[in-house]
Image (cartoon, rainbow, N blue to C red):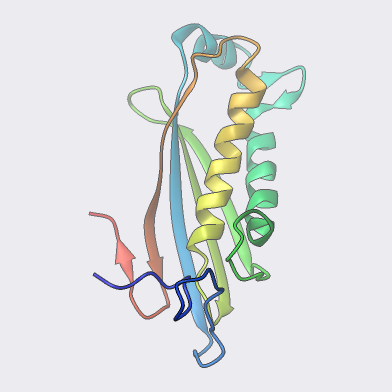
Length: 158
């Protein structure tokens, strides 16, 4: 196991020095899964996932992209980076859970996994916000990194 990277030699919080790293193509994919109560899911499906506030999925996609772009403002020791690309896809799985997948990429000295995780998280929270009037029994079941590439260590969840 590696050491924590966000601590200096005195054990104090510090941003990681990426000055000596090479610029490479970095990509990360994160996923959030939301479980909705059956009546909420039926109400959404009845109107093709549209509400008086707008399309739940389309608004969640925009919110997720906005969240990914603001990651360094939310996570104190993240480097501020400009994303080259950020895409979100939302679908229902076989268990009628909503699955959000956020893919972020950049040519940089640091990775984009926190941006992908933030994008998926903000999209999930947006769906919760848009549906909470129908029920507070909505569960954001998981948020996880699926894969990352382009840095010192690539990762792919089995």
